[in-house]
Length: 394
Image 1 (cartoon, rainbow, N blue to C red):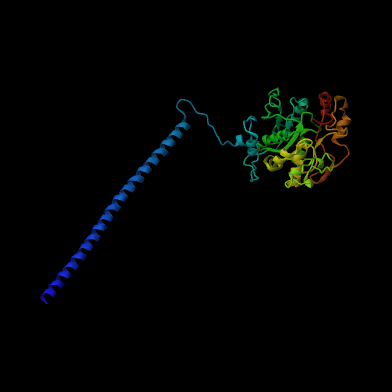
Image 2 (cartoon, rainbow, N blue to C red):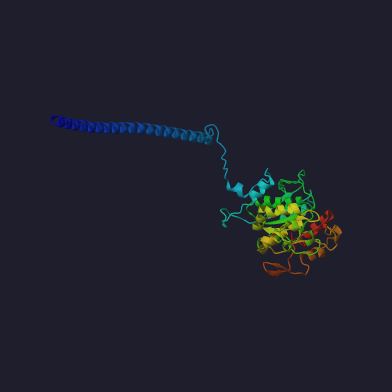
C-alpha cells in the first residue's frame, strides 16, 4: 500500500512538470514570434522609407531636369516658347508640305469631331482642288475670280511630282502644291490623286465644301455667287446614275460580289463637289476602295465609278445626284469637246450660265445649275478675261 501511494505522488509530480514545460514552451514561442514580428516590421518600414526617398529624389531630379530645359538658360537669353499642342497648327495647317504616306494621310484626314460646336471662330471655306498635268493656263482668270475673298477659300494643287509652279508670292496659288504622286489617265492612280487632294484639304478644319477642278476648268459665276451656292447647299453635287449600256453596267465585274451588286453600280462625272462629311467618308473607306482597285481596270475607269457607286450605296441621301461642272459630250468619243478662243462669246458663256433647263437645289427648282465649265484651250484665256467683268461679274 505504501508503495502504491508513492507511485501516485510521483505521477502527480510528473504531470505538474509536464504542464509547466508546456506553458514555458508556449511563452518561448510567443516571445519569439513577437521578436520576429518586430524585426520584420522594422525591415519593411526601412525598405519603404528608402523607396519613398528614392522616388522622391528621382521625381525632384526629373522635375529639375524638365525645369532646366524649360528655363533654357534664361539668364543669358530668352527661350522660344513652343506649344506642341497648338490649336492653330492643328486646325489650320499653313504649310502643305509633309512626309505622310497615303495611309497615314487618310487616317489623319478621317478624323471627324462628334462635337458640332467649334472652340474657335470658324468661317467656313470652299476648298478648290486642282488636279493638273502641270501648268495652269487659266491662272490669270482664277486670280481675278479669287481676288479680295481670301478668308473664304483654300487652294490645293496636285501636279506631277517633279513639277514646280512658278508664281509670285502675292498669287493665291503660291505655296499650294500638295505632296503629289504620278497620275495616269484611266488608271486607279487618278482615283488615288482625287482622294489625296481631299485628304490634304480635310486637314484644314475650316474647309466645308470641296470642289475638284482641272487645268481646263473655268468659273462662269463670280466668287460670292459660287460661295453662297455651295455653303448654302444641303447636298453634295456628285453625278451618280445607272447606265444600262456597256459603258455603264458593262464595266461591272462580278468578282465584286457579294459586296457590290450590279443594281448598286453607278457611273458619273469625275468632277465632283461635296460637303465635309461626305469627303471624310470617302477618305475613310478602305474596303470598297480596295475592291475597285483590284477589279475596276480598263475598260472600267475608277474615277467614273468608285465615288458614284460608294455614295449610292451608303450616303445617297446626302447627294443631289448631279454635277455643277458643265461639259459638252455631244461630239461623242472618250473625251468631251474642247473650246478654242473663237468659240468663246458672250452668248456662249450665257448659255452655260442659263441654258433654259431647271435643276434641283435644296429640294427646289432653280435655273442656276452649273458654276464651272470645261474643257477650254489656252487660246480661250484672252476672250474669257474680256468677258469676265461684263458677263461673269468678276
